[in-house]
Length: 353
Ligand SMILES: Nc1ncnc2c1ncn2[C@@H]1O[C@H](CCC(=O)c2cccc(C(=O)O)c2)[C@@H](O)[C@H]1O
Ligand SMILES: [Zn+2]
Image (cartoon, rainbow, N blue to C red; front, side):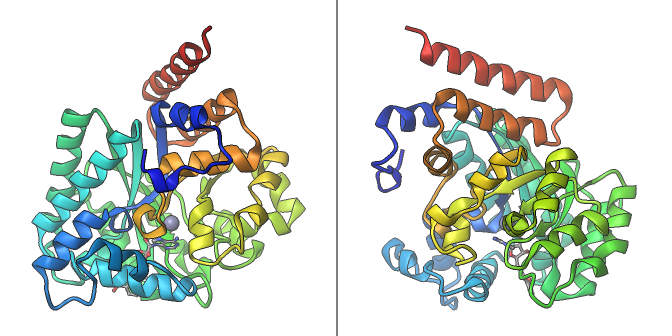
C-alpha cells in the first residue's frame, strides 16, 4: 500500500482487507495508467518533450486547473509513446501495477487512433498490446481485455478510424471486447457517433461510452439511446435526473464511478459532494474504478477506501462492490464465477474468528 494514499478516516484493517481483496477494474485508461517511473523513463527517452522526468516535478505537472487542462497534459504523455516497444512496455507495466493490487481482470481503455495518427504502425501496435496481454496473464495471472475508445474531440475521422481498427478482422486484436468514447464532452454531442457504435456492436463489441462526466444527464440519455450503452463511464451528472437514476437501476446499466478522478479534473468539487451515495441509494450497480490513477495520485485500492468512507461500507460491503465489477464486466460466465468465488472465500477467511 502506498502510504500517502492511506485515509486516516478508514480503519487500517479495512485498508489491509482492500489490498488483498480480489478485484476487477472496468474503467482505466492505458496511457493514463503510466506510473511516474514509466513516464520518467519515456520522457528521458524523448528529451524534446515538456513532460518532467523527475517524479516530484511530475506530481506538480499532474495538478489540473480544469478538464481541458487535464486533456492537454494527457496528450503530452500520449506524445511520449512513439514506438511499438514503448506501447509494449507501458502495457506490461500497467498490468504489473494492477496485479500488485490483486486485480484479477481489467478492461483497459486504449485510444489506438492517438497512436496510429502519431505514426505507429497499426499492426505493430496491436501486436505490442497483445504480446503484453499474454505475458501479463502468464506471469501475473491478471487477465486483460481491451476497450478501444474514440477521442471524440478529434472528430469523425477519429471515429471512423477507431471503428475500422476495432472491426477489421485483419487488424482487431483478440483481446478486444468493447467500444468507447472519451475526451471532452462539451461541444462533442454523443448522437453523431451512432453509426460508428452501430458498426462496433454489429461486430460483437459492447458499448461503453463516457457520458455525464463533464456535461448534464441528457448526455447520459444520448449515450443510452443513440450509442446503446451497456455501462456508462462516470455518469456523474445522472444524479440530477431521478428518472434517469430509475432507468439505470431498472435496466442494470452499471456506472463506472471514479471518485478521485472527478475531483482531480474538477468535474465534482469535493469527495463529500460526490453523488455515489445517490447512485447506491437508487439501486444502481455501482462499480469502483481508477480512470488515470498516477495522474490523479490514486490507485484502485485507494478508490475502494474512498468508496468505503463515502458509502460507509464494511468488509462485506466492499466485497459486494468488488462483485458488482465482476458482474458488470465482459468476462465470460465461468470467469466471472471464478473471481466472485475468490472474493467470497477471501472475505469469509478474513472475517473468520
Ligand atoms: N477522465 C477521462 N474522461 C474522458 N477521457 C479521458 C479521461 N481520462 C483519459 N481520457 C482519454 O483522453 C483521451 C482524450 C484525447 C482527445 O481528446 C484528443 C483530442 C484531439 C486529438 C487527439 C489526438 O490523439 O491527437 C486526442 C481519450 O482518448 C480518453 O481515452
Ligand atoms: Zn475515463
